[in-house]
Image (cartoon, rainbow, N blue to C red; front, top):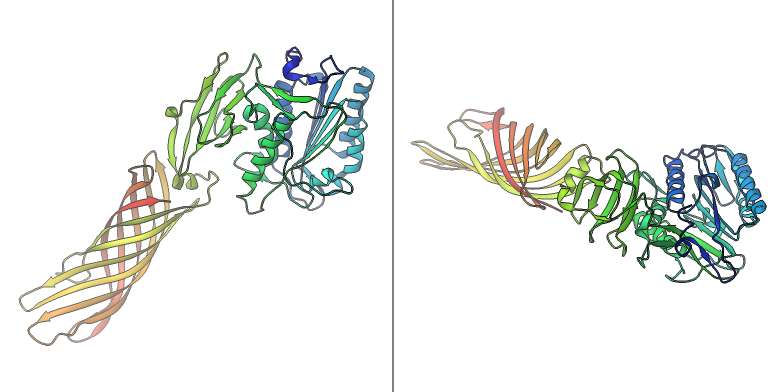
Amino acid sequence: MRLRAAPLAMGLVASAAAADPVRYALVVGQNAGEGREETLRYAETDARRMRDVLAELGGVLPENLVLLRSTDAETMRSALIRLNDRIRTSGAPSMLIVFYSGHADATALHLGGTELALEQLEALVRGSAASFRLLIVDACRSGALTRVKGGTQVASPAIELGERLPADGMVFWSSSSANEDAQESDEIGGSFFTHYLVSGLLGAADEDKDGAVTLGEAYRHAYEGTLRASSRTLAGVQHATFRHETHGMADIVLTALAAHDRTLVTFPAGRDYLLWSGGADGNVVAEVGAHDAERRVSLRPGRYFVRARGADHLLEGTMTVRAGSPQILDERGLERIEYARLVRKGRGWRRSDSLEVGYTVRTPLWSNANACQGLVAGWVVDLPLLSVSARALACRGSFQNAYLKSTNDEIGGEARVLHAWDFHRLSLSAGGLAGVSALLQRFDAMGDAPARTSAAAHVGLSGVATVDLTRDLYLAVEVDALTTFFLGATVDETAPRAVFSVRGNMLVGKRF
């Protein structure tokens, strides 16, 4: 009852109502759909996260909160009917929140092979005796709920900060428009819409910094976060939608951040922050966006894994939230990790690109010749399992005896495929390579000795050590063991040759 003891923060403020409303919630998550629908990974996790925030910050008492996971349509329908019966018989001012995450189409929710028609769901919510009802559906094509007869669908939110919202009426929120797919993310371990909604309710949406998250603040935060995150996916942009039906006006607060068993943690500006409970393998708790006006999140005391996203790197590490006074995240305790390493760790990045230039030296292909020295330049693409590069090389060697001088030039290109292991600032890589080149020999002799050009191919193995110099630059030292195939000419004949050589490369790389 501690949240109900703060009527300014948690009440439905209306001129005709003096009592605080009793809050009720039905929260449903179902990963399984029907037929050939792919099983979702995070719908039931979405429901658990929504349950937690409503119970801890939303003023919904345990006896008034129903969580259903891996359920069917009849169980959901019956649970909502029972909640409506309790609300009606209590006679007290009340508020009802219904949340669903799972499969759906434009006409029905799909719960494990059963269907609950959207019209019936809307009728059950609309028929509740609660003075205010909020229905949230995070599912594909759920925007059918927000259509208004005779009107047109609104693709962007019209709620302004400070606007007074209905105290006696209904609000519908859907995570997608009527013809869009709702999307999940492995990185955040949930759907985009629910993730940003929960983050907002934990404090990231509190734009006026009054310690309470209102209906308008929460919706706008979820809408903008979903739009921003889904714009970077292959499935395309996802637009949350809404509909209001108003009867009287009042401010509606969904969560109050000042709970005695939680701590307000402030995050520095300029970066996106993701938080996991316990460690990197825990559950995602919340996100604070780089452009969020409010940088505080209400957290339980405990240990959290933090990931901060910069323009070209991440900061990662753990933080301990202590009970009591508010605290500020200290980034000095986080480790800096470049994007190439993030790709190799499978941290949500598909590739990282680098430009490399440097010096190369290779043992000679001809007896008694000098080493071939020159320049190398290439482009590297780091992928989750392998790094692939294409590069151009040019080097010059020489040969001299009492009768003959020659310059031996090689110009060519090669492709390299490596696998890397990361150790703090040092990375070790190993793999294979193959390439082709042109060999050009020019002679200075007492007699007539025309220049000679031949084609060559080489294959080999490579080992690489890479050290980070700055946030963008790195130094790479490579040792390659090569076998080169070409036609070697002598006075008497031209015959195929295979020559083993060792090459060393020293390169400076720039990450993009």
